[in-house]
Amino acid sequence: MVAEYSVAEGYDIASFNTEESISNDRFIEVKSFNGQPYFFWSRNEIDIARIKKHDYYLYLVDRLKINDIDYIPTIIQNPHSEVLMKEEVWDQRIEKIRFSLK
Image (cartoon, rainbow, N blue to C red):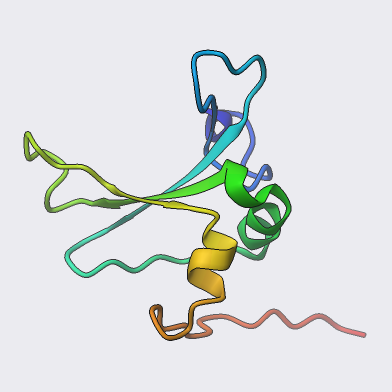
């Protein structure tokens, strides 16, 4: 659980793809929602997803179903490509803009 000691890593969990993995090769960002899937993605999370590509996973957890015995979250490998670059599948809306004095 990387998120317990650092929020700057761009992911919540450093894990392993297989039992044979000798170093962390699955980096998981967890987002939760109610009902229809949606999430907010920070600039840092987007950058890390772009860098880590197929080693980066987005786990979308529906809070309304999480206690269902057969519930499985939506898992998206390489979300930089599969979410950010798929505007025909995912609506994108800017919620915040950062301004700084020049």
